[in-house]
Image 1 (tube, helix red, strand yellow):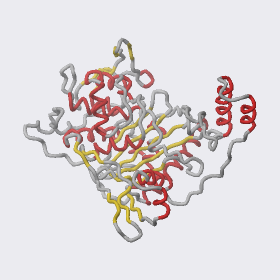
Image 2 (cartoon, helix red, strand yellow):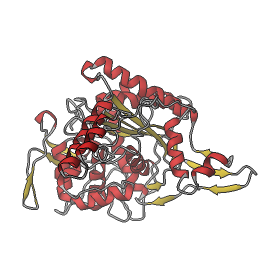
Image 3 (cartoon, one colour):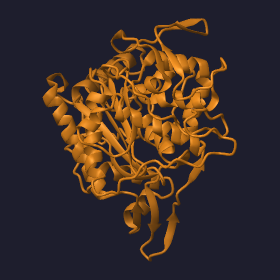
Image 4 (cartoon, rainbow, N blue to C red):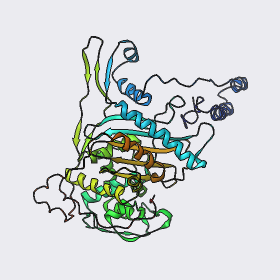
Amino acid sequence: MAGLIRAPNRLSPYRSAEAATRRRNVVLAKLLDDRIITRRQYDFAMREKLPQRALVKVTNDAPFYVDYLRRELEENYSNAVLTKEGLRIYSSLDLNIQRIAERALVEGLKKLEAAHPALRRKGDDSLEGAIVVLRPQTGEIKAMVGGRNYPKSQFNRVFQARRQPGSVFKPFVYLAALMYGGQSGVKYTPETIINDSQFTWNYDGRDWQPSNYNNQYFGAVTFRRALENSLNSATSRVAQDVGIRRVRELAKRLGIQSPLPAVPSLALGAAEVTPLEVAVAFSTLANGGVRSRPLAVRNVIDQNAQLLEKRDVRNEQVLSPQIAYMMNELLKGVLDRGTAAMARRWGFTRPAAGKTGTTNDYKDAWFVGYTPDLLAVVWVGFDGQSKLNLSGAEAALPIWTDFMKNATANMPVTDFIAPAPLPGEDVPGNCAPGQDGGTGSAPCPPAVQTRAPAEAL
């Protein structure tokens, strides 16, 4: 038990008997050295074999989702009630979307391993991934795939794995800039010119220097292009001007609940979050600035058809619709011209917004993308923190594209609807930024941009 604390998933005897044994032996040696146990107890424990178990049998069509559902229910119902009372539980699960998500993840990971032999690992540290799908307007969780093989590992990476989001975090920086403006007095618009060059950020007596992908810098770039091409240096300059604490508080307002240290590297996604948190935060943008509580359980009915519980959609307006619309238009450029442009070449043509994510150490690859009606987050990586050496556009985007093409095949094509300008607002095209509290003009028309050669980290 003591040995498991450092890494419960990786050191589980059910996952890796070898790793668990090594760690157990370290703990036993420490207990002996500190004279907590005797030599006889030590020898006896060293000879004891670790438990073995068969693979878990899958008894339903959405095991990761059902596990999550059970955790929610256990907040209000005992295990005895859940297993013996004959309750009928209605959820937000869409089985068709769930099957599409499972297939996209499993097949997508296999394709990555086939194309990149270095990703094929023996033993338990195999390439992993996760998908969570939300309906932005209601927060309903339509599908949840917490890993590629439930019988082998029930660890649900959608809400149990905290990983660095990398560039997926950057939109919060740009959103804060549009809302608050800079401490320097700059009022940011999609066409504001940003300096994408090397610089050093001094804070708390320390220096931090962000670097771009392949150390390529593009000089004077527009706010729009810096976001579309995920330029680290330009993004960091914006974050420095806006203030990292403002960025942090805005991310929390959108739905990020994990701790977010107010340090410069936060702007590039150095803090750890879960895919579910990322889904909630971006669904707030997709839903016109309205944050919805993630909803899995809808109703609980007993054996006498009496309603025991009804969970309603819970919404809260946390951004102005004008600012949310402007960000959606900017993030549409990521797919149309930026780091996720390959999705268009692969046949996903619907109006959609999104953001690629790659961590600085290449251990995590992300893509979050959404139409007005459906949002999906894809994460790819190794549980053991091995390097992928692939960007979000290379590892996560293909899985997301395959999923969205199939999941939306029979849905009507919709686009984000521009909200009515607020009184006194500039007319569309003037690109005047919104201030904290509500105002903001419609976004400028897309400018012709050149695309960076590859995704910035």
